[in-house]
Image 1: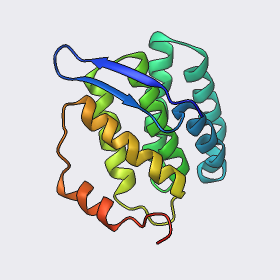
Image 2 (image 1 turned 90 degrees about the horizontal axis):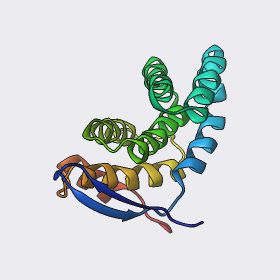
Image 3 (image 1 turned 90 degrees about the vertical axis):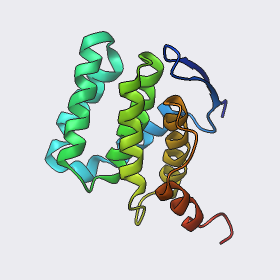
Length: 159
């Protein structure tokens, strides 16, 4: 898998370059497919919104993105869909590099990682990586106590 490189300049807030160890677009697609059962009757709405988000740009894509986030809020136990929303928030960052997207991504990641039980370990790893990217994009280089505790308590390969 080829890492992507993103150079972010938020009007002096932060200059940041990061090599991702995964492809957020592929991870989004996989998480989205896994979310079908979690969304139940709202799946078709999610498919429509994702199609609008993926196939358009500008205001239409932004509106679909916002509705996807609202749909995630209505399904607090849809872990795969929440991971999907985190991945597409990173896509929003790459399309429109503004602090609001970094803050949204940071909040989504912290919420997702706040209770990792039962979640896909791959998503946990990817979201942890994105958490650091969102933090760095906002110029927040020091981990808070929750992030330090999470990293310390997360089993590593072979544990």
